[in-house]
Length: 220
Ligand code: ADP
Ligand code: MG
Image (cartoon, rainbow, N blue to C red; front, side, top):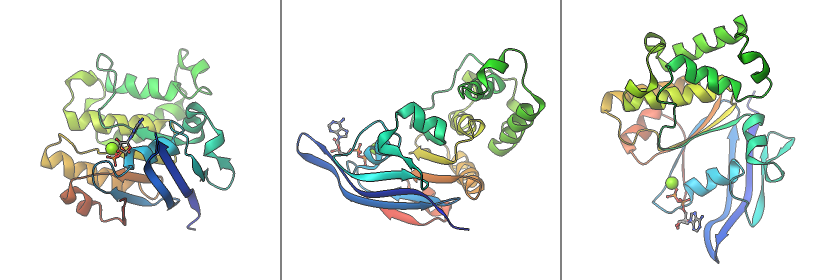
């Protein structure tokens, strides 16, 4: 089944008369991995801002699946609906362990919050274990996030989106500042996620883009 999960049509965003995005169309299938490249200032981050409700376009439409009109939803509603965003800089809680970071991310889903301080259900623990496996941090689960390498922090942050059950992940320039080895690991991770989740990656590093082996859209 290749149902379309994201429909962006005719989106235009102007800042003081300057068109940061001009009549953009973008369609993403469920389970697809898509890479977006383009020069600085092409509007890649602005496109993510539109999808996540941070910026409202002057024209066009943006739908998540058939039913959710993203232009009528708040940023918080969009996050709860299942669109997760990873910013360029990792934003993990440095003084908390890897496990606690995942636990806190899970609790930001308000259906889970009331039960958090009792204890996690076995289903929730299983889900955290599963995510730890995917992001390759099971050996580091009791370590404070502050001692992780830059790459490991980025993976933890991706894990935080996964425990929130994001269906569509938006990842902006994930490999800036990573070692080559970490870059390869990140490409593997994002390829693993595709299929279960849809992933849109914005990236400049062409070695990394090639390693993703995904369709590429150029924003210009
Ligand atoms: P990219 O991520 O592709 O490098 P951006 O989406 O950040 O590009 O920016 C696209 C254009 O819009 C740039 O010219 C940028 O200066 C401009 N821009 C982005 N956000 C704002 C804003 N909040 N106010 C004014 N101009 C902005
Ligand atoms: Mg950008």
